[in-house]
Image (cartoon, rainbow, N blue to C red):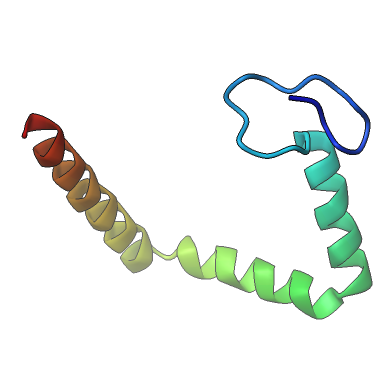
Amino acid sequence: MVCREYGKQLPKNYTTNICLDCSRENVRKIFKENPDIKQAFKESIEEMKKPENMKKMVDDTARFMQTVQSLQKR
C-alpha cells in the first residue's frame, strides 16, 4: 500500500492509506485553523494524566486484556 498524499510506500501492517507524516501535518492544519479544538485536545490530555484517571485506564485495559485472553483459551 502507498500513501495517498505522496505515494510513499507504507509498512505492511498499516490499516490506513496515509503515512504518519501526512497525518501529523493534517492534525497541525486542523489545530492551526481551529484553536478551540487544539485547546480541547490539550485539556483532554491533561485530564487523562490525572492519577485517578490513569488508574481507571490501567484497570480498564487489564480487564480488556483478561477478556481477550479468556476468549483465546476457548
